Amino acid sequence: MTNTNTLTEKAVAGRRVEFTYHRDRGLPNPPTYPGVITGTEPGASGRLLARVRLDGTRSNLHIPVDYEGLTYLDEVGPVPELPMGRFTPVASDPYGFYKKAGVLLATIGEDGADLVVITDDPEIARAAARLYDTEIGVDVDSVNYGAMAPKWAVFEWEPEDAECPWTVSWASQGDDQAVHIYYLPS
Image (cartoon, rainbow, N blue to C red; front, top):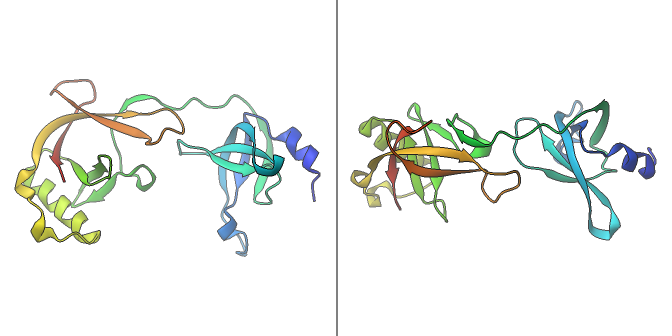
């Protein structure tokens, strides 16, 4: 067992780590996920927590520095900057972009009941929305898919640990990184 003081010394911003989820630790060859420590903070009962951003994610896990599923690597460097600003969505379950009927869709709004479907084809947009609604248990006969409105939109990354990793704003055709969508309000 490694001394907690040694781990506290290793838990520095920029150190590369590998993380294993608790649910996987009993597996014969548990998967590990590479990441970087973005900082530390005091936790409950005075335990020091490492803020770990796994590669490919935009938010931190808050992990006790002495957690057995956290492996400290020798590499220490600058904490990579998160991409900010406008982006073009790609399929990504962690960020809420789902591929349905060959196009991307996402839920928006305070309760996540509004849909945006990234396409310029109204029939494909309706098919994707209907498929999504069916999969999540919505009574599709109660939804007015004819209310889907064509719009132009831009998606923007929010700062790390924001309530939502991205936002969408209505735009005009030709705006930088604007994409054509169909919007279905709840």
